[in-house]
Length: 532
Ligand SMILES: Cc1cc2nc3c(=O)[nH]c(=O)nc-3n(C[C@H](O)[C@H](O)[C@H](O)COP(=O)(O)OP(=O)(O)OC[C@H]3O[C@@H](n4cnc5c(N)ncnc54)[C@H](O)[C@@H]3O)c2cc1C
Image (cartoon, rainbow, N blue to C red; front, top):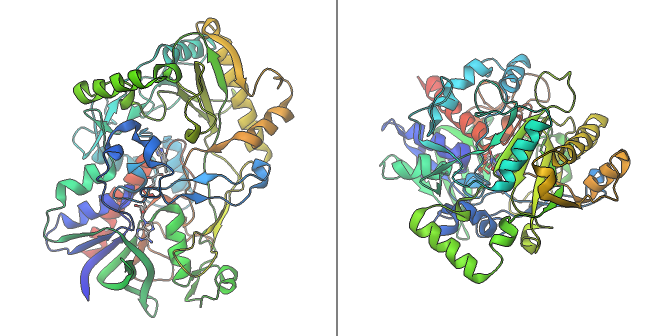
């Protein structure tokens, strides 16, 4: 039977960081156990490859939510990376830390050590920001962050129109102040994706004290009383057992980490009893406090070329491919969005409450490919939704996807904020220079009048989709619903920690990859400190 000091479950955004940092000391014998395969597909490394990896069972868990009343009963896909690098291998490459007040709020909730001044050193330690010009940015971390290489006239026009509509320009939304509009920063290096595996795992995979198990799905955490002692996993149809001398660390993400706790007997009594699982330790908060960002996607037709028309035929596609191969530039370096804006829907707010993702293309769904006409998408989301959902078990078997209840748009503030965001998208489209490039609104469409807030909300409920940021299902805290303490130790259990996006007590104001990597960095230090 294999034995290690530390077992990390999941080689995703956070897990790869922890594998690197713990194995830096050759005295620590470390195993990282990943259900997905190696990240060998070239589509993982080409930025625009998410069109091929998302929805593909070779790299995506392909979760689907339960029908959601907030989406007029729709059930929507929830992709999650199932491969080395986890979701950082299939994500949209957008690098966003969040607002300093997000982390100050975490601290305010009782999470000592998680305020902005505490986490900033970890954001800096993780990154190398190519355009470094700021005290708060990192210069020599493993994760490469670069300005977008691709610019498009329609996105420039959107930024100018936003300025003319009264919003400000922000050259670095990851600096002290998030507010304003500009281009996104990307987790790329030399025009290729910099996933957490590329940044943290591949450079150290030859370490003798680090073992990377791929295609190995953890099925249960093993215990001696209330002390975690290892895991059992399915590897090619065989059950294998791995022992942990010191700790088991769950980094399986916001869906699988709570699922794994529950199938191992840690969770809400009712959820476990319903699936015939003996309760080892009752923790009511496991799977609760689920938060996500819901994006509404207004589409505007325009009279200049966008990616929709640029990739229109096979010859153009071949040229784009050649451009990428020879120069590492062009549409294949495109992240999921180019432009962004962190704005306020109400003047009295202290910080932005909505985020735009500006895309020089449009589609009814990724599977259907871009529209045949030229258009851009002004996707908008509420940064700090109040609504929370939950993850429940369908069965005691890890192979059965759990039931996901996102519970979107369940409060008045959430509905109002999204409607105001859609109205701001329209307001910006009506300002120069965008107004003269915009030829009409494809969706919601002019028939949905701006003063008719109910119809705008109804359109959002009918069409909005996730922007892939589930968090909070094993929240950190000291209250009865908390799952881990501020040192990420599972309450009531020894030698078991969780370090991934599930521990966020409140979702961050922006995309969640950078915070998940920060959590991995900070968790590593705490694990090493506690071992000393
Ligand atoms: C399609 C998509 C687009 C996104 N776009 C962006 C973006 O542009 N910018 C951004 O900041 N964020 C983005 N995100 C979100 C961001 O990538 C995630 O928040 C972040 O990667 C979460 O990190 P994590 O460590 O919590 O989990 P993950 O990175 O998901 O890692 C979990 C790992 O655990 C593994 N695992 C799960 N169950 C088991 C098991 N039983 N046994 C073994 N291994 C297991 C998984 O296969 C996976 O590798 C996107 C996410 C997706 C899916």
